[in-house]
Image: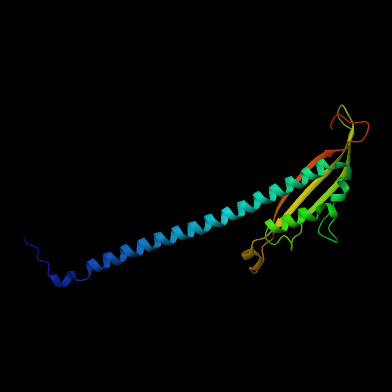
Amino acid sequence: MTCNIRPTTQRGALLLEGLIGILLFSIGILAVVALQGSATKAVTQAKFRSDASFMADQLIGQVWANRTNAAAYTYCGGGAVPAVLTKWIADVNARLPNSTTYPPCIQVTPTNFASGPVAYAANQVNVTLFWQTADEFSSVPKPPAHSLSFGTLIPFCSPPATPQC
């Protein structure tokens, strides 16, 4: 038995296969572009978290070096910026987007520890930084700002010196 296929019934099959191939290729390209956009956003957020971590660590180092005046670093965005924080806050505003809208919060709380072999006094220092990217800031509804919090204990060093100093 012979199968005769008339040329008139096969018209456009190659064109249809070509169009389907182009469609699949286009979907793949769009997926790669979307993946690139997601990766760029993730890298940007990681950079801001890294910058916030560096800035908080830098401030805690400053408080540690100037622990006799630790209370002067207390600031939670209201009122005038303490003189010891003006340069640091300018650096934060330069590195983190919209940090002027969401100012950092630095809390210094004196704490006494009576447990353990030696009783000592220390300052509990908590640093919280906030930021929000431009696209998040302009979106409706606006998502909450990103934040990073660090905390540490800095022992007092007043005569007589405690073993923790």
